[in-house]
Length: 591
Image (cartoon, rainbow, N blue to C red):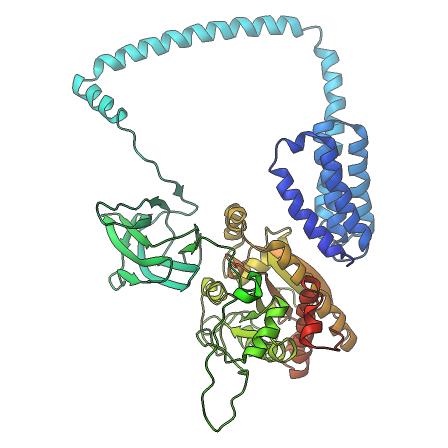
């Protein structure tokens, strides 16, 4: 199957990031040329596509980095040519400023070299005298510094009592454990307000809520059979106190954890302890606005997915049919996060053949979180995306035969970390978060699809900051810890799913409506996608802040066509991952 330009670009980008982590490979020129050729191939596949400018820029950027190591004028020339081509071919691209900055850096380097040569000629006559004079001064300074240090140490030792010296010696002889300190935020008097959790047999997410930011340390303790204590993971929150109404012990009792408990460990420190039955790995990270600390724990097989288990070993929840005279529907039209979907075993077998059995649809915002306000002030994002989400769920059930779980089917508030936890604990195979875009400039319009990764431009950071309900600075802070959090993320699969959905949205909506802009597939650190253990995307369906698109978003036909396009994108993703799956599900269909 022919690869698309988007797939080529994202595949190369992931490989290039891994390449940068290997100092040995960075030494060899031919390794750099491999990734340059791959980025140029992404450009050649679609020279006018949404990622063409990005591919050109990355080719030039790699030549620039190679020049820093090789000092070959040919590498420098190639970099300059690629940056100039980008400016000429894509004058309005987000990469224009980056290319201009790179070209300016090259011109400064040339100017600096010529000035250095002139100065060298002028100073050559007096260089020897200056060197001798400098050496004499350094020697005088060194001797005076040694004498000063010796005199000061002597006085200091005489002034200290024997008891003080003895105390210092005792303290030095007792090595202390220094746990890792996580302090990306400003310390203040913090109150630990609440403990929450979600779990399934192979995954548990615990959230510790606080009223404001604080730093913390954590440590994993081994099992102590003599004291009858299990494996324990503790997190100490600095400069903190326990809330008055907090439930101090939360029973969990799943396959991984016994419970989570909070206590006032010291006068200015709160300790949260997780008692462990068994586990494979864990991750701890914090989010802001409001401040909360997330503890994710996975079982020994943390890659557990329904779709990856051999067919004969797969397990799934099927309720026995009730013996009633009334006919029961095989699928529900709506689904809350706690419900078990009633579907027939034959439908499950068909879905399992897809490799995508269960899809979680996440209508963004809700309840007290209205999301973006429309061009018409009465139109709110939370209501629009809920309507789209319900339509999308019905179409996926009917057209793809997959089970669908909605994170919310009413106007209620859900935290961002809870949405991902629902997808993980329900063992979803895909996670699709539905949103509408917004911009201070009312003229902004278009459709774009995101997947979790480091942000590549200011616009992506702006969108992520808005959807995360936080500041751009907090997004920058988050990017420093994102690399570790994404180690098990399905980045390649997510980028493919995003590419199929975005392409389908643009092509199908363009046939029916004028002024449909393809803003492309983008990447950014969205809170709602953090920790998702399945391919996951966030779809910005249209700009609710734009007059034309706000009117369209309230139209039922427009919503239906958006959903048709998203379903078509999912279908193409499934077909790419398992070409015969759709033929088995819909014999004789076109797929």
